[in-house]
Length: 381
Image 1: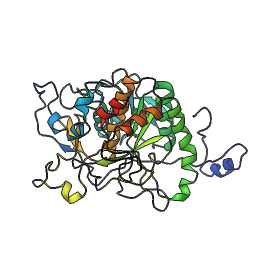
Image 2: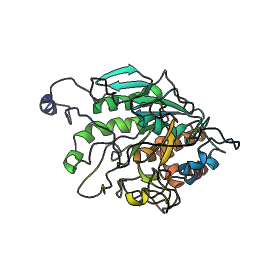
Image 3: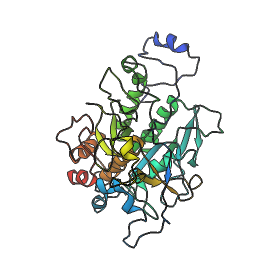
Image 4: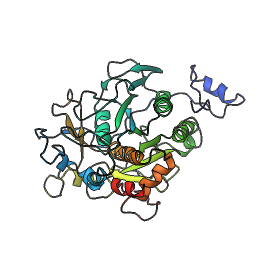
């Protein structure tokens, strides 16, 4: 991968020590497993509407999509909808039968246990929710930031009945596939390590084998967007960091709520966050769970998006997390790319940052360059 800079080698765990002493090898580490990074509010909450489309032309649940209102998506759609672009969702899969999702089944693939498989469907529900935030078509229930973009599902999590483990090398293979084989405009990674890692690991090891793949994707034109993590911690203290958002070549996204404040679960840190975007919830868990004293009572202050019908009959659900904030930005990348198809990854990121609200400059510890505003970003283009 990364034009031969990174190699996946089959062997025993102890072989990494021998490899690290070999001429030409900068770093070698044993492969490891990873999982979804979830906040305390991790169970999907159903919506109770009938799902019929409104006469206005916008979908049935659009009034409940406070995240799209805050990021000025309706105005943005007058200029761009992601038409002609490709968004890769690296996650648990996407429900390709959902009426609000356009998924390219031919290009979708599963990267599990060192093998690549054909893939349709979602083994958990998380990826379908993420995909809808980025690019739901608005055909029935909800609209995404880039409703005319093509979704490609890259599944890196096994189902409960699969015997394979998921490995970090599977994730790296999926990134390479998105950038090299698909030429994806944007790649969403709403995943995370189990917990923040210490500065020792940050100095080499995982960073050494991962960062070249991320940077290679960016050089190929794919904008990689990563969730900042849901530990509610500062990432600028004692060398703490998270994967993948702390790596060079990844747009790191923190989570905001309807109040435009950082949510109680979102990680933050100077030079660790590039943008903030709606992820759902308020500044505290207690306020988030209020049902009558806030403008958006629970669960409506979470993010509403698509969900597999075999897991929830309505086909829609509320969830919260930086997993929900990242695809807001991923969809915005597609909208920018529609207007500027030749823009490189850095130019796209600069447009998003220049159009962001609430912050002057780029160094805010909670929101980086500010909270995403898609219409403003398109104006910058």
